[in-house]
Image 1 (tube, rainbow, N blue to C red):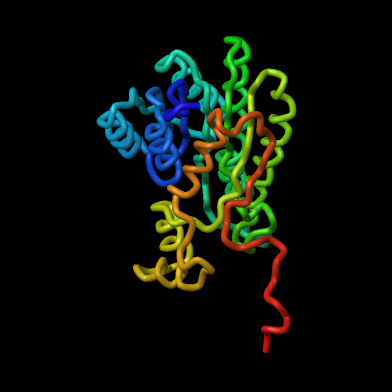
Image 2 (image 1 turned 90 degrees about the vertical axis):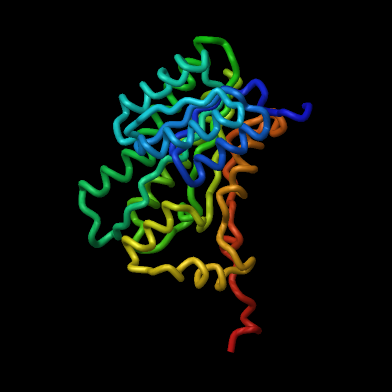
Length: 267
């Protein structure tokens, strides 16, 4: 495949202003991608991130988007194609991680989370696929899911529902679009160390400066998942080295779902 698997990639990355989205964009650029658009609601951060990637040789642009608005999500794809000529790779990384349980989530909270995490990505993927089919070129998409699709914490009820919905979209779209050479895969990301997670821990859980060190000390590998870890996986799935893989959903975490401590070691 050569040393630059993404030399021909024209990528659109949502949630690209920081955290995982930006890490994926950087990884793509490191692997040869020279055409890339970052999309985010954070205009200042997104513009700065695009400028940083442009400074290392990428033809990088920023597009402001409200992923909670289906029309805006679709228009984002058109805007990215206008800047790059086409979009061959889509990353749905933008997410609303607000809290809410089965007992206290309001209809407004439900809509805000589901619209950003499932509805917007659905219509972005739809427009991406429509354009690829019309132009006659192949495409790849990675949807950023979450390990909480297996159940999650009580305070994550609408978030769990949104990511479970996106998982279903991933599988359905992969089957529907395979004949058009469009591959769709997903990553169930575990607890990850990002600027967004830091803000969430402080806002929703009242945690202070030492929360990350305490959390990492209690994990099997002594650290949370890092954005760069997942970026390698996403770039692989988006590129030719993953071959014909489609409809795959990877649990990217250090704890094994369904595995429990040996009862002989308890008590």
